[in-house]
Length: 460
Image (cartoon, rainbow, N blue to C red):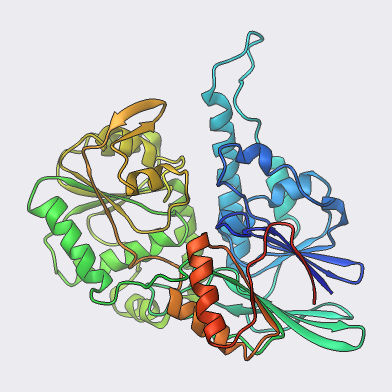
């Protein structure tokens, strides 16, 4: 049995791990690596023949885990993609949106003399997304699925996003049973809408994410308290606006539910809220479709108060005309828009018109990868480029980790401890400081730890 790390190795994005059992090749996740400016060209260069892959296991829908699947299909992969039902539904939305982003980037550059667009060519088109969706095979949580005579798969819920799962593989390797788990991304307890991560079984090998290694979530303030504080300062004490960049899938639904609870309990006077993301509207419908998988708090709220994702003074924005009307809405308001790292989406329009507005607050509620516009704002750049225009930053920039979908350092250590005493723990999906901090903590606990480089191969 051989494991090769081809993505999210000593960085956060681009999750992709190759497990070989004899001649059978399984790819665990196939995400976009977008930490380089040339990521569209970089992601076309698979370090293996896509046609040689027998199976893909997808842990969850986020684009850094799923976003390069259509490229894999376009270049010859002809097998199945195993995932949970919500993951299949949410991934479809994200992949179609990726096509739109690719096409918009292609058109952003001036035309050539022949009249062609000179921007980067799309990694894939809608046809390739449809071909990919046709390969999805959905599996329920906690029910072993036999892949072949030697390999079975069990998905264990890990929070983080609706449908997100750790992939636990039980393998007969020349008569010896071995277990290996891939955590995907690990959620946190008591997160709005989502269930708590479930304990992983004991395994021989563990591949775990490390996003929050060495970092600890805020404990001295609740999400409700922080949102009340930010809304009060931005929209009530002064007639301003609060812009919250949020991933359309997952983060937006949890944020909307948290705001619903605040305003239903009348903890603040009414404030108009706009959710400006067509993809968020689609994702919310999927959350409703899979309502049996939300947490008990959300189910109880639904029984007593109604839909978690609908309430007075909340408006979902559908068309571009409606989006422009939001930009011209001059009363205090909250604008929730995608994408969370500010790389594309309608959020760029709202930033364009508000980044130089002293009465605007931009509240980041999630991770922003290096090189993204969100990361530049968070590190305090006084001038940023939006829509090819250099703009001074006058808006107030704030950040909270209370809606981060990732477990923190303690959650990660706890997850590893649940798996007994693996022969080796592999750390991926983290910046260098996070990887090193988590590695040191786990080694202090007696675990054998590796931080693989891209292309590192391990015989298990």
